Length: 254
Image (tube, helix red, strand yellow):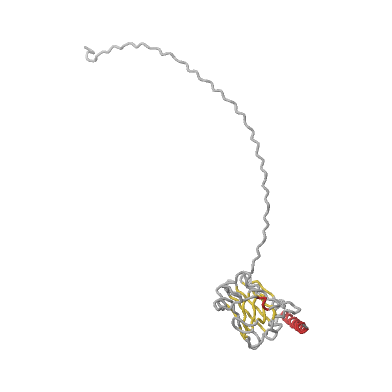
């Protein structure tokens, strides 16, 4: 118990010194608590310094093995959304050593197992996944690297697919390269697309409006009297016609 407290105090002191360097903008800078930058819909960039889970200064980057991932070591993860690309860069780890690294489902915690299993595009129904058909670099995000003489290393995974919303939340470092190995460190990263919480919409009660019927006054209709037209009969009189004598043109002038 006392050893853990002492280790935490030492880590806090180292992290405080590291944060001072970050404020000055020197090499390996970065805030102790970590910083995540949204790249405007094009991905995220997260960076932090490792600290043990019981450190006085909280950090999203946790080390479970102070020998391989010392307190104050730095990690940066960049995701390029739309390109299926994730990159990792580390500084001040144990020099000349091969590490495994993968995108995991959960966030980091005091227990190394808190991050859950590897993120898989096609999920293995059996967990933890050991089936090579699912546990492979094409179906997962593998970021293994080997550090140089200064403890720096980097790797990039290029996939032809994107994460499902909210199902990839961390990068875990393993003590050996490949698809397995002891979990020696973890960095919580809000990979995009993040989970979208549905907004509760309260239904608005709509009261029916009372419509009063309009009063329509009946217009009195007066009956129209049509007078009958009397037709007067005119008596027909016979007019006598006198016969006109006909004179033959043959006998005219004789």
